[in-house]
Figure: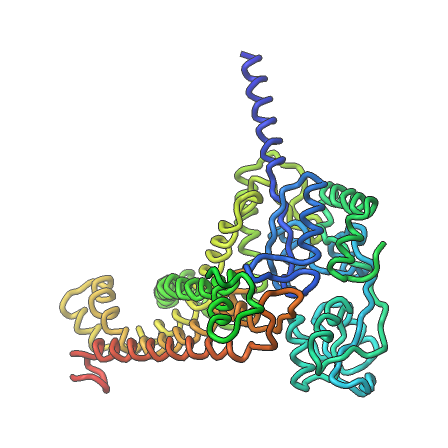
Length: 239
Length: 288
């Protein structure tokens, strides 16, 4: 009797661990910020972070799934448990670190550039667009310049094109491909070095997952895989 | 989609467009129309039912029930929609998970609230962490229906409350004189006659509901406005086989046509309904 009971308990426990091993790690991203993350023609998440994220999950032995979420509510939805990781080109900042935890950075601090319709924009006098809740928006506000915020990166570009704003401040990796292909837009010479590199955002109570992914990032850094991806997608300097 | 779409750069005109409009992304857009229509089809009756209950409660003779009905109407009508959609839904989701947690994991020792984090045991998660993405989407949709039903239910309750009061007293007194019980009077006299007063107000709510669907994206449900913005945004050749500039205007024009024709159709149906309801009823507009 005791033995059967013990066997049943063991079975139940092993069943539980099995279920835990099966667990899917859900990666939340914005899906609107090329080359970091965007939706490709098939409607799937694609980009630097897609490739890197899949590689990290493989190395950490995790089954991962991608979900898209609005940028503005990306942190509240993480802490309430709708997904487990934020991988959305999110710079590591002290402010965000109070609410969530970050892994080590998987990109070098990417300089932020101004993109405008003409090269002689006087920033102190200009209207500068930025995406809300970004380091760039915080930076423009700190300078005391006129800031207009938009919910999506696309709208910040459109604001410059239709004259609502004189310049947009965003990660160089995001604005450069746009300026390259659009004859009307150009990058200003001035650049800002803000932010401390991009990391994965994880719930503060999820220490185990953070360690696993941290180790995976260290491993892609060590064998050069990360540098290859950074060069391929042009998201800043290599390590 | 089509065989000739392998290399879109070489195509032009209609052929290019036929490829462009049949990418996987565009099918996401087309599906979202169905999502929105389904949402409306499910939410409208649910909100009406909730409104009916609310109106009945607000008219109740029992003070506690009346207080409940009136509080529901007052609170929900007073809170901005966007606040409701940002916070209420997260609270609702966490409420469900909390109940499941108490039920399924009685031996769990860790705290559920750890700072900002909300952590229930894995088997209490809704939907389960390892369920496929479509279950997550259906669950999000379900939360959206509940939230829309609660918000619009409060407005509907207020409309129905007014409509119930608008039915001429004489009708109810006559029913009582014929010996009908309160319940009989309510179902046979009051309810059939109140609609003619309720429909104009309800039709307003319906129109607002049609246009409120972009709030869906706050819940992670990808609706037509989300897709229009995503597809219309400028695309660089580096990231797509179909580069284009800012085409949001065209996508939003499509939405405009959709919304306008849908409201037009609704107006037509509602006016027919109104004619039908007025028949034989003692109102100013109808035949006495």
